[in-house]
Length: 138
Image (cartoon, helix red, strand yellow):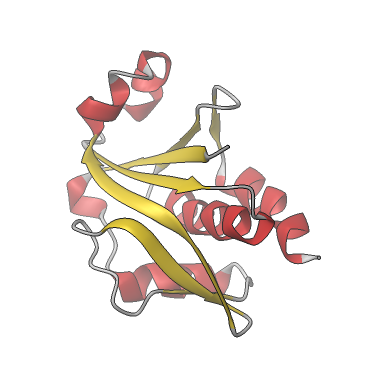
């Protein structure tokens, strides 16, 4: 079963790969985004280096309005954020952790609204980072 998170941002606040990586590093997790990541254009699996091992997540850059068609309940929270980074991962805990940490960095540093369809809730940067901790303890 695959899971998803949606991070809604303003186009003007979309990070560069290096800035995003720096914010992830500030959270203290051992994750390195793909050095070849093309923000705004990549689609599909994006590898991450986690303590020398390959992990990652699927990533999709979309218009917020296209995603909000499926989740109108979060439209008010999203407000004028016009872009969405959708993350998808399978049952692997480290993939989940990569997604949570990448999303936490977006929420904490780029004013992203992160929505979990599974929980039907907007998740804070603190909650995302906290939820990621057990993913790296195995």
